[in-house]
Length: 128
Image: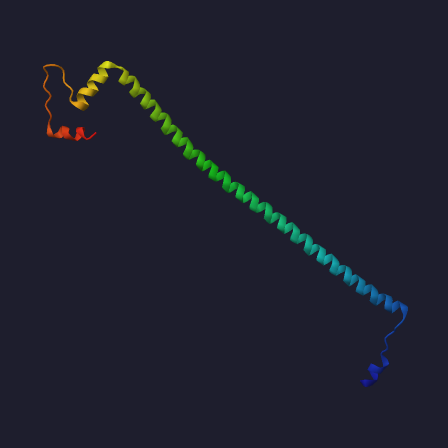
């Protein structure tokens, strides 16, 4: 077997050197292409992640604004109802008959010659 090894000779001519250099160049180009592919994939992944985060944060903001809008619309409806009630109350207070009735009930105001009787259950009205 030692004979077989001594019989193998490697050619060291221009063709073989060019072939070795060509293989090295091909390997070098393959590494460069692989690095570029990895780099472009990383950049693309970063861009996709960035826009995904932006999209998600925008959706969260829109949902929050919708919720705030709903809350504010509810407050607005309550305010409109309260305003309507207050306008009605103002109209009633401008009516002399209603005003006299209110004063008589709330403050036990009486006309001349009239006597006002208070019952124990009426004491709760005095606190108002």
